[in-house]
Each structure stands twice: as C-alpha cells, then as structure tokens.
Length: 172
Length: 168
Image (cartoon, rainbow over all chains, first blue to last red; front, side, top):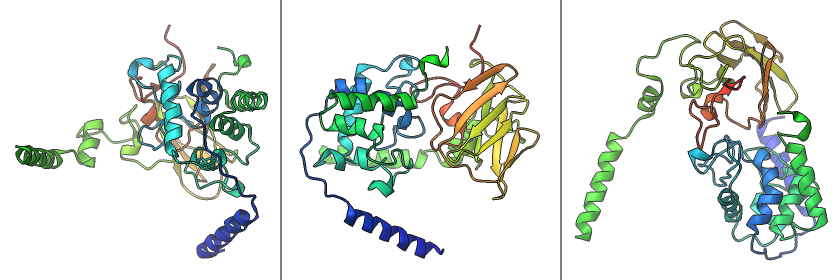
C-alpha cells in the first residue's frame, strides 16, 4: 500500500471511530489534589512516563520528576521522591491542559491513550490500549477528583503493580 | 535611560550569540578536540554526539571505576519481543548498528553488534558478566545513547553509570 493510501486509510479509520464514539459530556475538573497524586498516581507514572528520556527530560512540555528519572536537585539522586517534586508533577499535569472541559478529554489522558481507542498521536507510543486500562482509570480518577473511591484505589494499585520495578519478591 | 539599557541588552545578546558554541564546538568540549579513533574511544561519553547507532553505551564493573568493563553481555528486548545481544569491548563500549532488514542479529568483535531490524522502543535491558547481573529498572523509551542518561556523575538528570556491582 502506498504512503498516501495508508494516510488516507488511517484518516478514514479515525474519522469513522470518532463518528461512532459516544460524545463525552463536558464536566469541569476539580482542583487537583497533590497529596492524592503522590500516593495514587505517582507510582504509576514514575515508571511508565517519567524516565529520563521521556517526561523526565526537562525540555519536554510535561516534565515529571521521579526516583529513577529527573530530580529537582543533584543531591536528591538516590533519595525518595519529595513532597515538592510530586506537587510540581501534579501542577505540570494540570498545566498541560488548563482548559480541559472533562477528565476524559484532558490531554494527559488523550495523548498516551491509543489512537485506535480515541487517543491522540503520542511520541512515546500507545501507553494505554483503551480506557479500561488501569493506568488510564487511575489518572482519570485523579483528574476527576475521585482518587479515594475504592475502584480508583484498586485501579491505581493494579497499574502500579504492573510497572513496579521493585516488586516485593525481586530481592535487594 | 531605558532605551540605553535596552540597547546594551541587545548588544550583549548579539555578542553572546556570536560567541556561543556551535555543535562542533560543543562536541569538541565533550570529547576533546582530537579524539582517538576506533571502537574503544571515548568510553562513558554520549555516543550520539557523533554517531547514529541503534543503541550504544558503556558498562562499568563499579559506578566509580575509571575504566569500563570488557566482556559484559547486554541482552536487549524491544517492544515487539525481539531480543538481541551485544558484548562490550575492552574499554567497556558496545554499539549496535542496523545493517539490514532481514531480522536477527550478529555479535561481532570490538563491541559491535549487527542488527537485522530497527528496534522498536521501549527497550528492556539486562546486563551480565559472569555471575553478576543487573536489569535496568525502567525501560528505554527513545534514547539510543545509554550514556546520555547514564553520565559519569549522578545528579538531577543522570542516574550515574551503567554498572554491575556495588562498591565494597
């Protein structure tokens, strides 16, 4: 298949998918809770998004600090993540789409979501295959102010376990 | 006075721009003006400053060692589950080059691996040397030069060298 044909087919597929999708109702986002971000969301994004060659790169629009990624100061290398760093992460996520009209339309969700599932093109690829992915549900719950719901806590725990570089049985 | 200050600022910026470093000057500052040739040169430096490798880097026995570790084996798995290997040369360097689209890989001498595909990111890496083994805790999402993130001195934007053993 030639490149123009492939491009046209991709455009048509996206258009059809968009036409067939349920419209997402507008819903103002609450003030984002940095404490909930630190406890629920950071363990997920720490590994899947915040590596030094992705959002741990200070030159990228969404800059994230993480234990194994970018630190706010040299002296923090090897130290646990700080309250300030997670607070700045929360602010950075809010800042990528300050005028989002609904959690599901927030760029922090639509960029890493697979294009086939209604997401946008993302240089880091399709992080979440669909909206049922626990990572998506975890971040969505935080954006919606629903992080402390039992189903949200479960989603965050499941997503964090899937990417945890230090699982309990991994040894020292 | 404001106009004078503005003029002085513009002149300062212009002069600064003229004196600013070019890519060649930055490269020279990083690796020296007369780098040696060959696959053992510039261990620990960011290979991508001069080369276009699929993946490349330097392995050390310990994080503070002055010289790299030869004979370390890297097992790299790409996003499509394709694995390939590289073995470091005496300087600790390894480099992987895409040679064809035929699949597979071939470990050559002097730290070189020929690859039959362009690896799909993210990559997962395991490094071994004898009984020593380290698995990279995060994935490589786009950076092909390991030493770009694994600079010699750990700091805000570097996790330090790739090493296999903690200091005694």
